[in-house]
Image (spheres, helix red, strand yellow):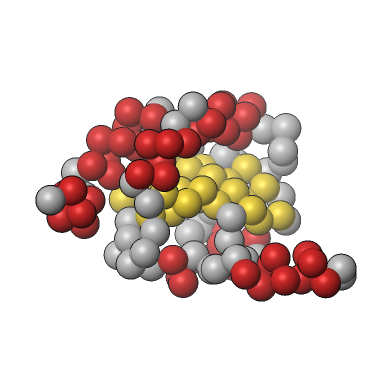
Length: 125
């Protein structure tokens, strides 16, 4: 493994290490060609600024590849009971699962759920 890649992987926190600091949207799909994954990516691409303001990190589990965290795909699939189909899970800063869906989350559903969280309300004061 090239040194630069090894350093980049080591610098990425695990989902557990993000607890109390970040909200996490885990997006899981069997392949990169999954149409629901493409739709969720399209939705999130138009929502980047609002996601950043809400301390949201996107973690993709696609096949055996993970982007956005240093966890292995197998570990995330076990921890969150991810099926072999598209699944999206919103995890709060407390580490608890807040939303789960077999379809892409609309931006307004993510925004409303995050904005209703007690830690989000406390941060807006």
